[in-house]
Amino acid sequence: MEANRDRKLRLFMAAALALLLAPPLLSDTVTLPAVTSLPVGAAASPFFSDVRVFNTSYTAAVSVTAVYRCFLGTCPGAAPQVTFTLAPRESHPFDDMISSAFNAPSTAGAVEFTSSGSSVRVTSRLYSPVSTGGTNGMFVPGMNVSDAHSASVLTELSNGLFRTNIGVYNGNDTGVSATIKLYNGTTLLGTQSVTLGPHAGTQLNRIFDMVGQAGVTTTNAFAVVTADNASLGLFAYAAVIDNTTADSSFVAGDEDAPAPAQPSPQTINVNLVNYMFTPGTNQPIQVTAGASTTLFFEATQGSHGFSGISALGVPGTTSIAAATDGDPYYGGAHPAVTYTVTFTPPESARGQTFDFWCTVHHATVMSGTLHVN
View 1 (spheres, rainbow, N blue to C red):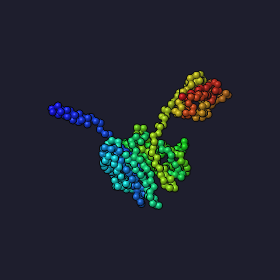
View 2 (cartoon, rainbow, N blue to C red):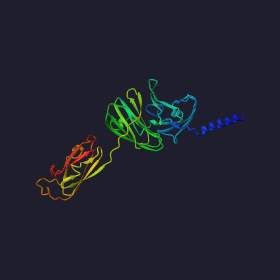
View 3 (cartoon, rainbow, N blue to C red):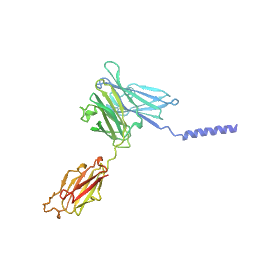
View 4 (cartoon, helix red, strand yellow):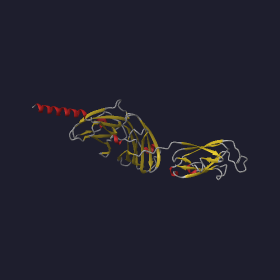
């Protein structure tokens, strides 16, 4: 009997130790980036958000705290919140959640749902009643932290027969600035910048109008949303709305490839020795594709000009006291001069070699070479 008691005590202590050493359940946050409650009379078209919160666990209940982050309309002074418990496999309904749960009608924003573990799923439907009866709505998914990106792309944007709204929500504890670039095919139509505080967002309605492209008709536009801090992810979304039926589609931002880093500007000194550029033909000047390059030309033996490499954006002729064969300074001792030539080699020039020469003296007498890395 004594041995049996000792065995039970050891088992109890082992179980208690396992509980103490078990890692705590990490909190998980699901964000609805676009929710609203605009009753009749508050807007041209009333809109409401019906929300459903589901617990996927078969065995454990879960406590959920929902916080309303209002950023449009007359927002409450403090972020309102509600806490509720979901039984295993329970779905909880919140019809017109912004008004019924947070008492904040005539506002819009985002809702953050925080719980322990990762068993909570959130969905919503943003809809408007129509005059002929029924509703016209758009599904808005709950988005996980992994859906927030420092660079997002929104595809299948349209204008003309459709209109497009773009929203951005910052779920971070620090502020961030974001840049929205709107493209039609590969053509950049315009850029908009927004500054967002912590847990704040905005929606840019009729984005084509906002960038001065209201007359563009397209179904093949896209937008890139980029945070000014690569370590901070943003939730980006678009609503594409049929102008005839008001039917709407939700487009969630997908992770975009970050733009390649731009090469640092470079300055290269070009000297003149015995009427030859140094570095010269035997030692080409090395420049980098895509980098703003300044050639600082120092002519210690007289006045000279610069020509060539127009393919790199350099003017055809940049001349200082451009002499001719009959000029008394030609080939003689001239006053020392300095000047600069600035250009940016395009990517298409990578690996190519370009000659340049003095406009005062013949190219066969005084020339140099640029090699684009």
